[in-house]
Image (cartoon, rainbow, N blue to C red; front, side, top):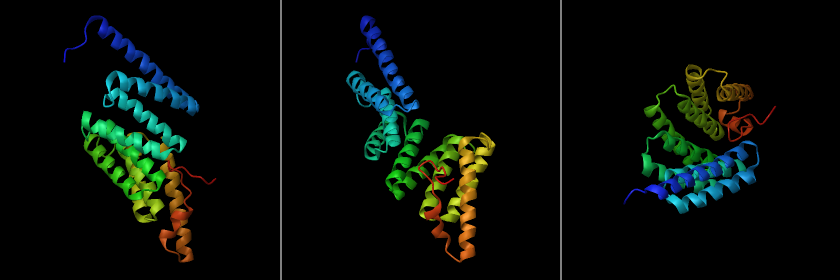
Amino acid sequence: MQAPQGKEKIQREEDKIILDIVHDLGVVYAQQGKLEKAEQMFIEALQEKEKAWGAEHTSTLNTILDLGSLYTIQGKTEKAEQMLTRVLQGYKKAWGEENPATLDAIRTLGLVYTEQGKIEEAENMFVQALQGYEKVWGEQHPRTSEAVHNLAILYARQGKMEDAELMYVRALEGYEKSVGLDYPDAQTAARNLKKLRVKVEALSRQGLPRQCVDAGLGLDENGEDKED
């Protein structure tokens, strides 16, 4: 296929700039909490990118990723799963399974599965992401620690308290070496680990099994404390 030349090339470059602006406006709206407007911008950008470059173009996939992430925030988990599955397939085809963007999409899909209560699927995604991050970035990279942290939260919800504690400790060690313990996710992990240990100790004094503690952890999808 002959590469575009002259006016056609200029027009395509202008179209890309315009669609990137529409996409970026969606990002700004999302950051401002204007989720409906953000969704409109992402959908508009997506439709035009599909017409211009096709469904598997990486720019198209990037917009699908942000739309899927927005659906996750909105609680539209079925739509989020559809979008993120499509992104993951596209990224694997374009860049391979060990590309950082592919690994991020895998981890994000794991978060959606967690929200849906699809525990086995979520664990599989987090383990895949973790193994990929370790290979690409190493054990002490923040992305690696985030995947470990995700597994800690998931294990706590399953009542796997020993596994959860080990993952929280590992995540904290990774955060400390890479970004420091003042990093927001590190502080969240520290709070959750403390709460986990307090409740396990309380249940132990009552003679109850450790598996009972997960019902009282009070964690949201990001691992944040729901309780004061």
